[in-house]
Amino acid sequence: MLKKQAIDKMKYEIANELNSGRNR
Image 1 (cartoon, rainbow, N blue to C red):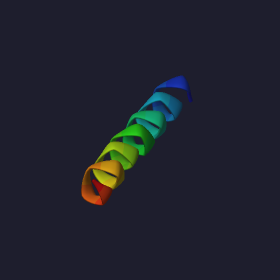
Image 2: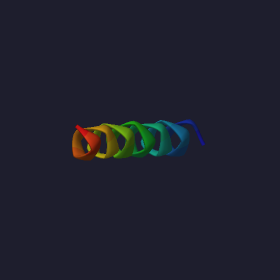
Image 3: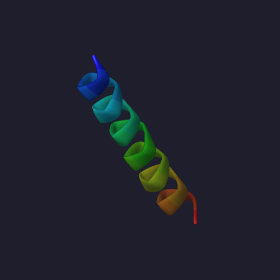
Image 4: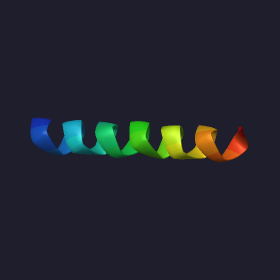
């Protein structure tokens, strides 16, 4: 469970970085 949560969090953070990169 913890590993899955960590992976989901990492994917979420990476998606945020990609989205903010597109907006700039």
